Length: 155
Image (tube, rainbow, N blue to C red; front, side, top):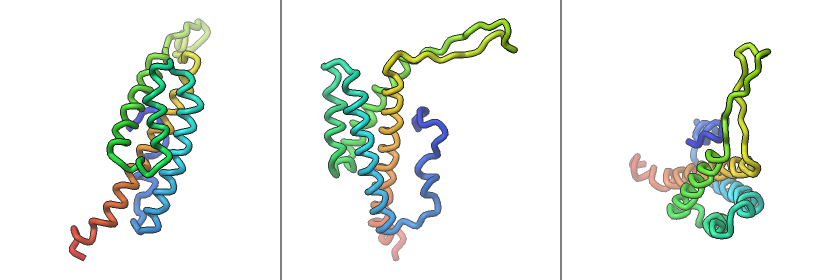
């Protein structure tokens, strides 16, 4: 799971104990489309403009796919995971943790984080993209469970 999601509980915790009905799966699909809209806006407005022209095509292509049912295809999830990894690498490269010495501090100083300008936009995008991946996977699993459970359980 993505470390940038912080204290947000995984989607599996949020839907724990919920009976998978067609209505719940429909709600998950709605949430997935909603989250894809949020993530697409984040990519197009805050990530793509910060990338060099040569590196804009992959995020643009992923964002374009977010406006369709293709978000429920494995190839989209693979592209999404690749994009998340590349943005996480940019966040890591632009985040510097250092020691700020202070003789008046109890420990003689404290850790400080410096982020290169624009890195926070990448971090926010990673959070939104990771949430999209979670909800899409949950939706796919819920839909499959509705389809396959009667055969598996012989009911």
